Length: 268
Image 1 (cartoon, rainbow, N blue to C red):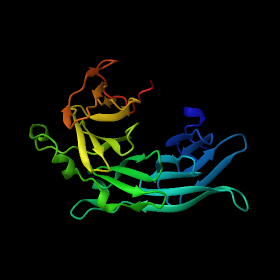
Image 2: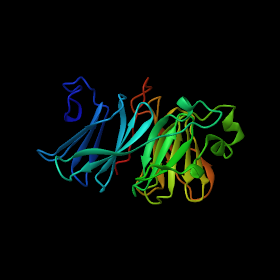
Image 3: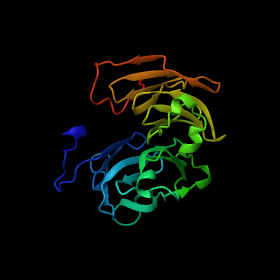
């Protein structure tokens, strides 16, 4: 019984995502339907109109809203409706990232990772094609002129690192713990970029060579950690000047692994 919920509910639906909203003491459960559980007797459920499966969910903290991503690449915004009648979840918006001309829309724009800024006014979408797109929240309005495309990042990458290879899909997005206009963007190939959203500039490049799984900030914002498919994790110093960085430590705590840790975070 993972996380206190059965692997499949009575309808045969498998739990795909689980989120906790600490400000409202609510748990969010994602499967073929979306459900929110709070104190005893507090429960909200709703079904997507689509038959696709929920792959990710994110609370908009303090707003009574949540966001779901389905495996058909559609985003759905929900509100807890406590008006007349029985309270429940109501879908108030949806969005699907359009394809770019000249690219395979079903693959290049498939959303691989979501970052909802702590301010809850900006949603960042990493994609299979290596791009990052931005939506104004809660209207789900695409900020098309702010899109960060793969080619823009490649202009800052040293020639010896390019080797004619793609950076791969975006695997991780992490907001800077001290500077909300900055974020880490991690690519499958191993490259990590510190991106300044306000100035639209690359501030640091971290040249990893192992397939990336996840990223996690240390709370001061001076260091972050990355996990990789070979079972290793690396710590990286963050310089205040534009530079390319190498890891300060690289550790394989449990020996060579076929499957590395899919998620890592800095607890202290």
